[in-house]
Length: 169
Length: 169
DNA sequence: CGTCGACGTGAAAACCATGTTCATTTAGCA
DNA sequence: TGCTAAATGAACATGGTTTTCACGTCGACG
Ligand SMILES: [Mn+2]
Ligand SMILES: [Mn+2]
Ligand SMILES: [Zn+2]
Ligand SMILES: [Zn+2]
Image (cartoon, rainbow over all chains, first blue to last red):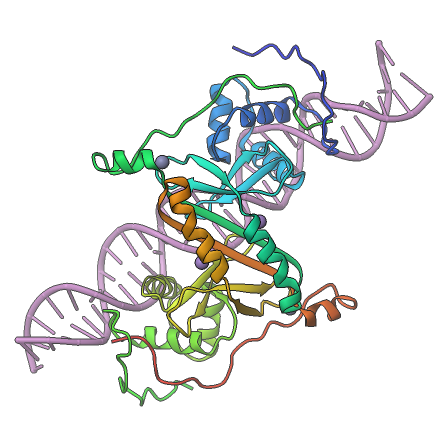
């Protein structure tokens, strides 16, 4: 099941991050790229194991931290404070509305909030303003299902094969 | 040094929370009420020890959780995910802008964001919408001091004696 | 192609905030 | 004053994340 690592380092160099291209990082990035919703480091570690790649949990944590620093993933914290990651398609700052039930997420247009936050700087005298904005709710699908079971929709898992843009190099 | 618990249960019953009035809870509430900025459970535990009260760390955690449920404190999470608490003066939903340097906070008027968030429900089909909005920056004071030391302003600690409104009963 | 040093890896252990257990104490009410 | 449900806290458990450190490997340079 050890997937052919044939593609070597072809076309690898989109956003130079200063990170070496290792088997583990390629695997993390590949699996993460197929993940349609936010997942935790541990879930990702399990997915990697399923997919045949052997990557230590330590490395998964480290890699996700690097990807965060490099701006290649979006990070949110669930209610328990656990960090969840999603491969970021664009390099824009984004916010998400996440279903507390099934975990499905959708980006929201928070331009209004961004402008409001920007205005806060002058208004308060604070500099280097940062903000976190996390939105959650119960999606329409889950609301229906909720009548029956107490909300345990199977979260989606992996999607089809992705491109070769991996962000390393 | 064991402060005279003279005031007994005088004037205790502002917002009925269903919580019993114990020595420990009174102490937590009293010290927390004198805390001008967000603090962690552990910091509060230390402050309690300093002030002569003996309250178990477990009880501090439990009490803060109850106070949160009862709406008597505001809670934020710092960058490490640690929960920080602040005695809430009013019972309104609030957001804060906190200095990453000294920890000083100020409530901000986020009405615009509240309205925007409310509109999201119809727009997305999600129900039971919740949001967290946390703002941080570097306050004017710290910005000045930053030129010298690498930002380690002494965070303020306890303030003077507070009133007798403790929220128990 | 080889060499080599900086960077990356991972098993084990440490960390650390927070929760749970359970025997003991206590608040509040009749 | 007694009674009982609630509260307390020391010890222990939990779980996500980081640190350690011995070993592997990426990739630049010759
Ligand atoms: Mn934003
Ligand atoms: Mn709000
Ligand atoms: Zn859902
Ligand atoms: Zn400051």
